[in-house]
Amino acid sequence: MLNICLVGSGGVGTIAALVLEQSRQARVTAVLRSKYAIVSEKGVDITSVDHGEVTAWKPYRIVPSIASAIPDDQNGAYDFLVIAVKALPELMRSLTKDISPLITPRKTAILLLQNGLGIEAPLSEQFPSNPILSGVSMIGSRFTSARTVYHEDPDELKIGAYFHHESSLPREEQARAARCFVEAYSAGLADATAKGTGASCILVDDIVAARWRKLLWNGTFNTLCTLLRISVGELIRSPGRDTLLKPAMREMVAIAKAAGYGHVVDEAVVKQTLEGTPGTSAFRPSMLVDLENGRPIELEVILGAPLSVGRKLGVSTPVLDQVYALLCVVQWTLTRGP
Picture 1 (cartoon, helix red, strand yellow):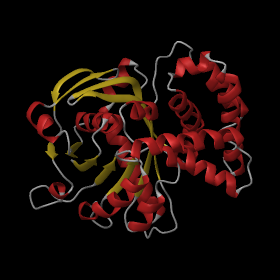
Picture 2: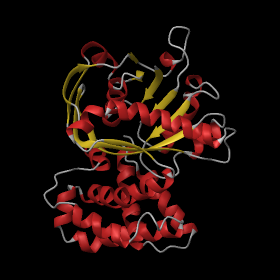
Picture 3: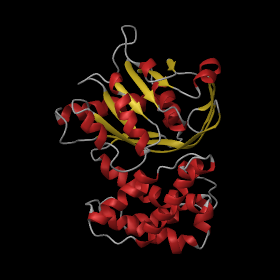
Picture 4: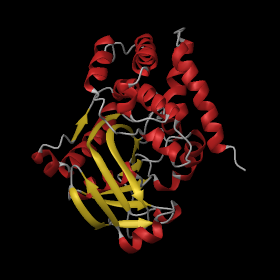
């Protein structure tokens, strides 16, 4: 039985915990802060495209803080630490220090279930003797109240080891940790897979390539929908599809190509993405949902990081530069305080 700690029990993290426990191969200790009291008492009600109606669900153990999750004689060391909090730079800087007591050297694999580019490096530097895994999730899942989750889009997850020069571990040991997690997660998705919901968990050799592929969507659709405060379908139907969205996607492709990932995203993928996104979609991306709820947005990892890569490689990105500049002001309004 895998012993797993989850930090970040939002819409994505809660579904991940549910899937892992449904595998019957893992038990999950979930760190809940603001929701600790109500979830401890009443559990979480989940309406899921993959798992149906799940009432009053709780993971194996719920704790109110990272300090409360520190391994002890009763619960033992963790095999995996799953981080599913928002990838905000200041939050991650403090979290990287706070999680140290949860990690057993050469045993605990750290999995980042987060958006963005370059998010693995700080963890790999801090924990060189632990496998660092990275997860690219395509899922629509969010809390609609303190204990209610609405999971509307299938759980499509790609997992891979983040091979880094700081690591003191053999590549095979890191890859083995990734395979172990994928096997458990896939077992938890067995019923959803049998029903043909579209859920999947796939082991990939190059997780950075998978991140660039997601950035083509996240760095354009997510950012523009947030800036304009419209749904994905509205963006597709609007004049901005051709004047903003398509040029922005082509700029992201240019950055990826300059960075050596032109085999992952190209003009054909841009065309496929635009044509495959229905104008009827009411989907509101994660960054827009955060804005509408007054929460900081994941601007730096989703757009700032690829733009930084582009600048270093001499790629011209006039549309994305303007989107970033405007969203920096939006971020300021969310974080400026009284």
